[in-house]
Length: 310
Ligand SMILES: [Fe+2]
Picture 1 (cartoon, rainbow, N blue to C red):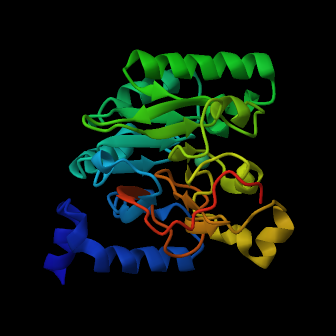
Picture 2 (spheres, rainbow, N blue to C red):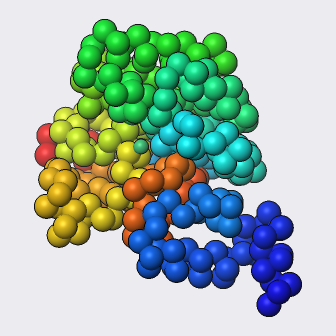
């Protein structure tokens, strides 16, 4: 047993340590301690989800391509660089073709905007890294348009200066060599600060075009049904299962609480809510930080409903 514990403390190979980490996690959560995965004993313990991403009308050249989603890094004085770096290295181990970062990159000021841009250059993917913004990326000044714009623009500039692609109600295309039609990626801006503009983001997109939408907060998923996306990748919730409890509903009334974590089929569309990498708000059991790997495939079912208002 002593050898097991020693191995647990010193061996960075997280796959071999499931038993110990699970025991510690369960004990700590029973004691009401949140964010325990950030403690030295657990900080390497990320959950890697692997999912297929069936898309109607996908070009054959895109079949098998890998898209990794990470979210809610919240780089800040309490979420450290070394804590996040290890996850980015594991993202690279998955050999993604494209990496998406779905908002809340920072919780902090201009210094963290600069630092997160440097941090994300650690990611390696042949088709690059696409970032969208969440509420925290506009800081606590999100409701003050002038200051929010200044901070959002600064973060965008820092990221783009480092070669990262920032989509704020804009679109990009994943189009590998040999593809006739690429996968359109629409990145929506943050809703809370009032910067979201789906009409601008989807401008020029036709109903037959395969579209992956990046949208930080999944709460507005139903409001976006008139737009022709097949998949939506979100974050924001940190796996907030507690919000669906009776007490959570009383304390924090909010719409669409059902979209807290994982996969949802919504009116024939596909929604995935990533729990994020940061700690905080992980109150219940079994809510570890998450990296999600999607593998593209052709959807031959023909049942996806796209572009019709729900
Ligand atoms: Fe967040």
